[in-house]
Image (tube, one colour):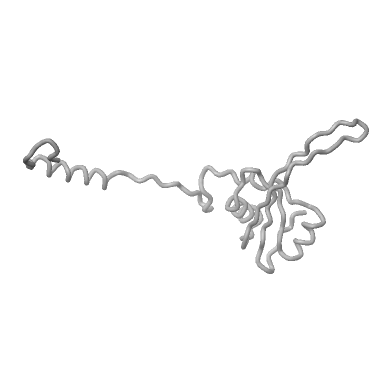
Length: 136
């Protein structure tokens, strides 16, 4: 760089340094995430993703159409739910939708006090025709 000099000097020492730097960049090891034998990324605990199947009248009506509803962890993503269903129920989901369940204020009978029923997340898992999950 000839910012303060009027003449730009090139020496033979600068050329080999550039080559050494480029070879060091090529030899640098790359870090990869290792996967277990089942294709699930290491460090992801799928056992805590699916809390329980959601057994309601509406969920029962959906199960006839190949859609199953689960209570899931609040930090779970669609990918986590899909991997957990595939691992534990041996069925590959076509699509997963996740919705938030809002918390509600409830009153105690006879006490006159109110409390809070915590919310959470629920996941709708869509399966192919012919596939099913036996939750109970």
